[in-house]
Amino acid sequence: MPHTPKSRPNTSTRRLVALTAVAAGGLLLTACAPWRMWTAADLARDAQAYTAQPAQPTQRVLVVGDSTAVGTGAATPAQSLPGLIGQQHPRWHIDNLAANGAKFEDVVQQLRRASTGYDLVLVLAGGNDVIRFTSEDTLRSQLQQTVVLASHKAPRVVVMPCGDVGHAPFFFAPLSWAMSRRSETLHTLVQEASTTQPQVRYVRLLKPRDQDPFVTRSKELNAADGLHPSSAGYQEWYRELVAQGGLAGMGE
Image (cartoon, rainbow, N blue to C red; front, side, top):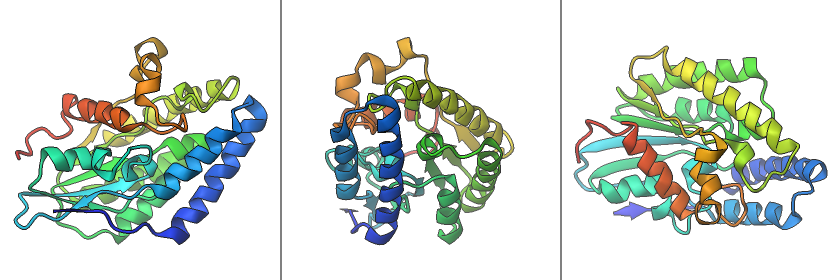
């Protein structure tokens, strides 16, 4: 049966403070509505990572990453991306080590403390590296560490960074323009890192503004904070994960 463990307040609180500080800087640059920052903090505080432990699992999945792997913005853990995977595949065992505010340097640590013997590692991260201005060289190194470590945990790895952060309603110009440029760099680096390990698949959520469903269906797909996906937004992510072959060949 699905189980939603209690969050780890110490780690999450530290990361939440950092995210709020960045958001405050964004407020000064963009005149972003202050209520969005507090809403984001509330959503992060209340979110719980989805896990599942069926009695006789057919597949074992490890989820690592940031708030999008926790499911921040979804109405319930079952409506997060890992939760949607669990609903569609009730015989899959799902462990989730993700944490709100995590950057790829934190994903590396999540993978280091994870056990082995998984069938799939799902990596959902990158937005905090965009927002918190991780340097390109540092991010490249951390991505390489991520795909190597993940490849030691499972024969199949999916790396699925968020879409264009600059398209999020949370940000206004000119900061949104910088977020878009940094999102493009993130996806370029993820794609490069993914080609270095044969079992790694890169799922691309980055789209031009006029083709981005998080722009064209903004009210439906974005959570109340204008930063995270809503339950419907995670459904859109799940659709892309399946359409791009992220779960292909894994059975039920």
